[in-house]
Length: 138
Figure 1 (cartoon, one colour):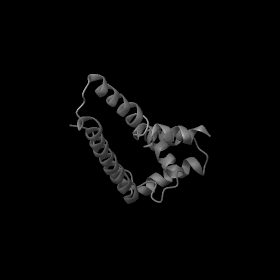
Figure 2 (cartoon, one colour; figure 1 turned 45 degrees about the vertical axis):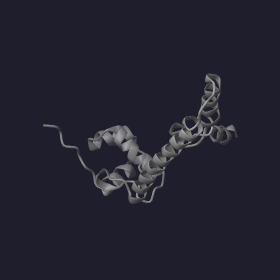
Figure 3 (spheres, helix red, strand yellow; figure 1 turned 180 degrees about the vertical axis):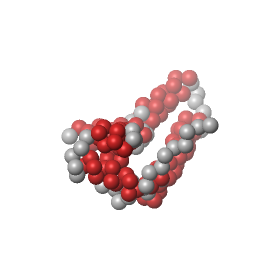
Figure 4 (cartoon, helix red, strand yellow; figure 1 turned 135 degrees about the horizontal axis):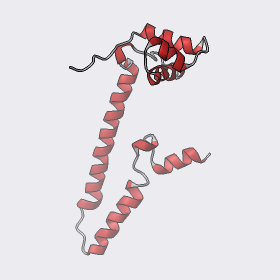
């Protein structure tokens, strides 16, 4: 039978982070003392420093705002994919091409002009490559 995961209350997490921040102790020291992983304490500290309204919800649950944000991002990505598929069907599959070269040109334009440049990419923070370059050029 698998090992049951430990659950920590919000108060426990806040106190653990307080030991690191206010008392200036090292994460490794506090984690060893409390019998928890350093990475876990580090993630609690990071969430605390991000200043979220509910930075450390108890029992591993997301705060209502984070849960809603996650749901909306998933829905947004699904809608983007549906839109992209519709554009692909409209731009490429909806046409009859008279020559093979005409089809190749249309597909190349779709990939190079729309898909690679305008489509939003999750690894770029849901920005298009052009918007990402503009944002990071400064």
